[in-house]
Image (tube, rainbow, N blue to C red; front, side, top):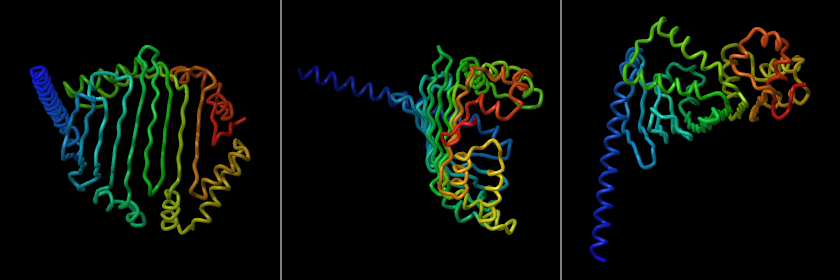
Length: 314
C-alpha cells in the first residue's frame, strides 16, 4: 500500500511538472507571437508593453496582464488591467469561445486630446467587456454575444446569429495563420486581392437574428454638456430638437416615439432587434433585384423584422 501511495505521488509530481513545463513552453510561444506582431504596430507609430503573459493548457486559456498601448508621438493611450481568452489554439476554430477584457482606462495622451469638458469624467472611465460565441461547423452557424460596460457612461450589448459562416471563418483562420507565419506588407494591391478572395465567402453569410441594446448611464448628459459648450444650445433645447425629429418621422408609431423620448431624456434603454422574414445571404442582398425590392424604407424594415423596444414597424 505504501508503495502504491508513493508511486501515485511520484506520478502526480511528474504530471504537474510536465504540465508546468508545457505551460511554460506555450507561454513562451505566446510571447514570441506578440513580439512578432510588434513591428506592424511600430510602423504605424505605436507600440505596446505588458507586465505578464500566461498560458494554461489545462483550461485551454491565455491571459495578458498590465497591457499598455502607446503612441511614439503622444505617449500612453490606454491601459488594460487584463485580457484573457479560453481559446489558445489560434489555428483551430473552437466550438465555444470566450474573451474578457477588464479595467480599460484612458492614458494621459488620450485625456489631453479629449475636450476639456469631458476630461474629468473620462479620467474616471473604466471599461469591462465580455464576449462569447458558439460555432457549429457542421451546420455553419455562428452565435455570438458581446457586452461592454462603462459605469460612468452606460452599457452596449450586441448579439447575432448567422448561418453559412463556415467558409468565411475557415478563410479568416487560414489567413491569420499564414500572416503570423509569413507577415504580409499591406498595400493597395494586396488589399484588393484580399477583398476579391474573401468577398465570395462573406457573401454566403446569412443574418438570422441581430440584437442591439444600449443603456444610458450618463453618456447622453455628457454629450449634451459638450454640445452646449460648443454651440451655446442648452440641454433642454437639444432635447427639444431631437424630439421634433422623432415626432416628425412617419415611420415611427406612438410607442416608438415614446420609447425614443424616454431615451432622449436620459437614464433609459433602447433595444433594437432584427429577425429577417426570409433566408437571404449578404450576396443576395447586394443584388439589384433585392435593392429595388426594398427601396421603400417600410419594405426594408418589414423584411428585416425590426422592432424597437418590442414594437414592430407596420
